[in-house]
Length: 205
Image (tube, rainbow, N blue to C red):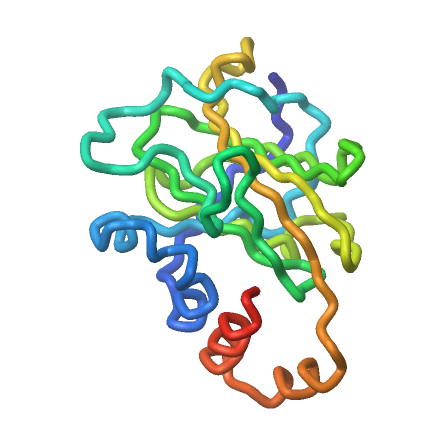
């Protein structure tokens, strides 16, 4: 696999606003997990045409995870027969993934529409061996805005073997952008990030 991405190391502390916005997703993690490293997919990194997506569910690049969750998309729990669904009012939401301690050096983010057509495919270098990975769609180069009232499927893969993608460890979820009434949008514009998070929770978003 050839990667033209520039090596970038960027780790930041989780802000109070980020914690508030993602609180419903973090509830399923233990305090020890929630306080681990937090990294952000680097800004200005473009989509890569390399195919590292996989349907595999177990990889060979995870270190001991005794008492800790495996690779996990931080989304509300849904029926076992369906992918977890996250709803958003944002055209460019931020997604979160918990990554257990791993030997993988690269990861892949893939977004497809309801028809299975590829919307975005990004390979990037992991800057931390474990912790919370923040995927801010608004910082991904050439990422198109999510269409209102449309569902998407997304996956995050640890590239365990650059040669054989069948061994990649994958977590998946669904994402739907919904439109809010104008009065709610106007109200959101007047609120602090914490108040916005509380309103989103009331609306079930």
